[in-house]
Image 1 (cartoon, protein in one colour):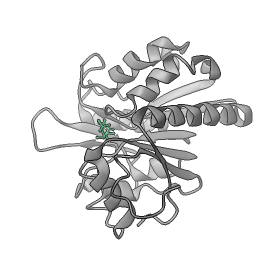
Image 2 (tube, rainbow, N blue to C red):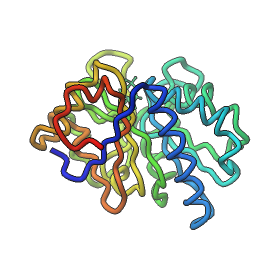
Image 3 (cartoon, helix red, strand yellow):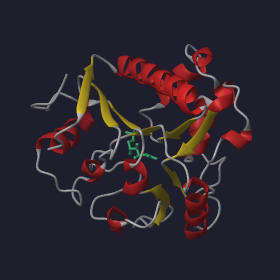
Image 4 (cartoon, protein in one colour):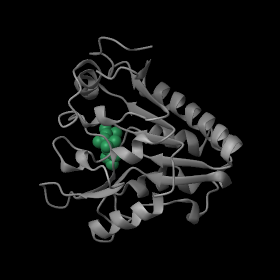
Amino acid sequence: MIADAKIRVFQSPTEVARAASELIVESAASAIQTRRCFHFCLSGGSTPKPTYSLLAATDREKIRWSQVRIYFGDERCVPPDHPDSNYKMASDTFLTSVPILPNQVHRIPAELDAPTAALQYEQAIRSVRFDLVLLGLGTDSHTASLFPNSEALLACDRLCIPIHLSQPGTDRITLTFPVFNRSRRILFLVTGPEKAEALRSIHDDPIDIPRRPAQGIRSINGDVIWLVDREAASALQKNTV
Ligand code: 6PG
């Protein structure tokens, strides 16, 4: 079980998105006030889309976008205009709707061969400490592209690595535990009944990172917050607020 997790349960995915967007606005304001810049690392998947839509519309004016730098926690090995690209998803849902310049968006160059792309991105983020990282959860308990029983879970001297998956055309590039865990704040967004068992297992079962990679996310000097909806939380036994 994750002893220090903060789990907040909401009635619906819409309420999760509202709470997430508020936390992003608050984290941005605090980072910009104290350090002049907000280093924000995005997640892929479908769960964050409603949150990104709020950032593009209702909450757009609440963030000083000129002081924001965008990064990605993982990416599929496809060009940036491919339908599977996390960069494209973020661009379509909010990056093209907010006043942010191309040089403020640090995407993973996933159109290159994977080892080269991973090395280039590692160089790009080496001196960055993320103020906020968004993460999702897979039904197999993966997060970012850190999958069960993968060698990537053991990477302690790399910040970004290529991931080869058995199905053709599914290779990815992911950031690793060391870079996620040195972030100032980590925000998991988890919604839907299909995530209930993975969420329960991560929070209520013993730590077993090879089996449940999301248990390896432990902010060294910041906090980890889980925003989940009622359906995803339905199997949880403890730790909720
Ligand atoms: C990705 C993610 C991945 C995702 C989970 C949950 O690029 O797909 O980084 O880790 O967050 O698989 O995905 P959903 O939000 O689509 O359920």
